[in-house]
Amino acid sequence: MKTAEQAGPCGGIGWANEDGQVGVLIIGYLLLLMLVLAVVLAASAVYLGHSRLLSAADGAALAAADTFTIDSAAGTGPQPVLDPATVRSTAEGYLQRTAAGQRFPSLAVDPATGTPDGRTAQVVLTAVVHPPLVTVLVPDGIPITATADARSELTR
Image 1 (cartoon, rainbow, N blue to C red):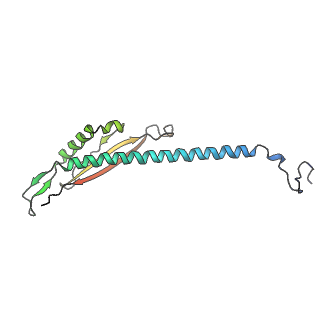
Image 2: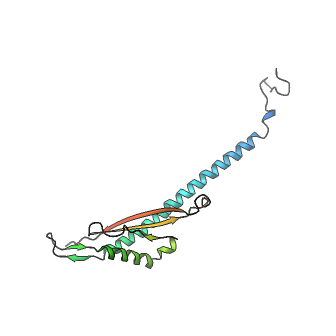
Image 3: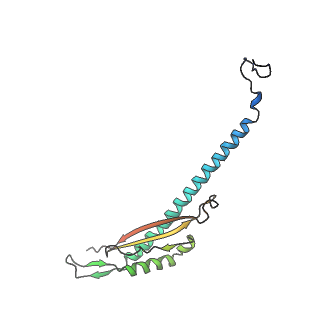
């Protein structure tokens, strides 16, 4: 049987034992909101870092594609030919000229950089992104990779 203190105005259970429970609920929701915010910020930082790295890789691939030599022995007419070592050194030179290393703390040209078919310049860059608010969880950062291809075509 309910006492008068436990009974509500309509005879149901009153709210006397529920004091302070809303504060705990609000704190829980705020913690959840902060966690979601941290995840969104980290994902955005990784996405923006990858976009910037891809832009640097595109520029390096374009610069490397312009270092072709002409192969006139091809049966279909003169064709541009790329040297893998020249592609790599041109990509590294482009990154130094544009100071891309200052934007990415651990920027490196991947060994896969070169020319897969002798006509396409392929540049593969790697770097590390340090997202805000989660550096405690990921102190070494998050590694990202960007690949860009460029090809020179001879036209008349």
